[in-house]
Amino acid sequence: MEIVQVQFDNHLQVAKHALGTHTQVSRVHGAKLVAKREIRIASVFIDAPAAFLKMIVAHELAHLKEREHDKAFYQLCRHIVSDYAQLEFDLRLYLTWLNLEKAAARS
Image (cartoon, rainbow, N blue to C red; front, side):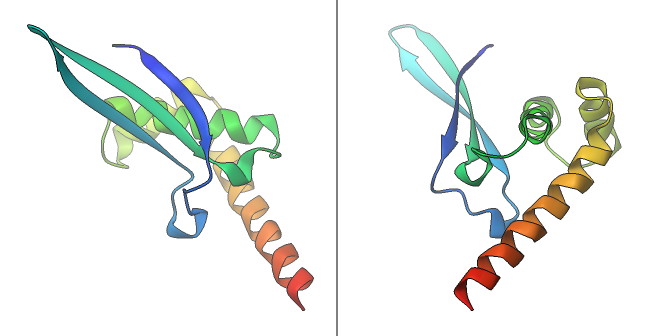
């Protein structure tokens, strides 16, 4: 089954720990069941470094095979992107920086 769409989504709230989402929708077309997979990435990452986008996509791709954040999930993430753990850490720092910048702008 292939991924039919990857897009940024303005409705995803990073504050709720969702960097992106993955969905699988199945529909009946005549006598066939057709499945469609999508990945949506929070629009806050439009201007993020490409390495962060790569990490988020790897995360969502891994979820298509492994549902839980368990050992197998993270092994798959590291297989897709070898420095996954470091990128995830750096991404969390980037989000903290964005939040601090946003708070400072409001002050």
